[in-house]
Image (cartoon, rainbow, N blue to C red; front, side):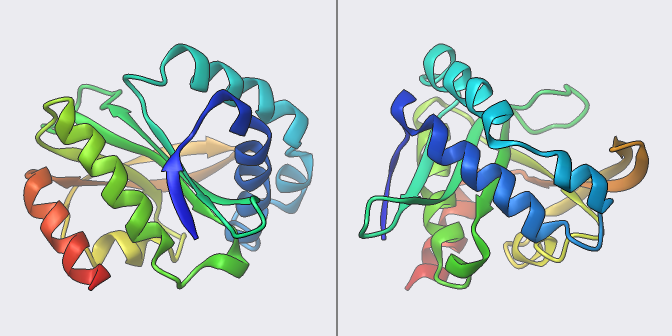
Length: 180
């Protein structure tokens, strides 16, 4: 699997992973009606915009299989809330279920951390639904729990956890160690 920086031409592939991975990840957590309402064609313009307007400051990386299909992505940038000590943020990381458990998440994360370090970020925040078992991935990387908030998705309320890594260089070392 190749990990590379995303381009505007990747918008459709990223939108597909975004929608399909939500359906896979949040089945049994978020209402089925809401998940069924998610459409690739609705997400594509958002990713085209993100990959055009903010690509330098908010890098996106993709995992591409040997057939050239995008099977995962991660996006990063400036921390958006201003409520935490972190200056950087992992906005999203999604990998299609069939491609999980192959260290793609770690590889995508390493690229994003390097990009944030190049932009002089020193720390990073991520939000994850408490009911999402993928939070164990983040917890394995030794973050500090920084808070929690209620988020509304599809008209229902969910607890979202905020995790912070106060030292991106240390986080990079942990990630690299897990890749060996």
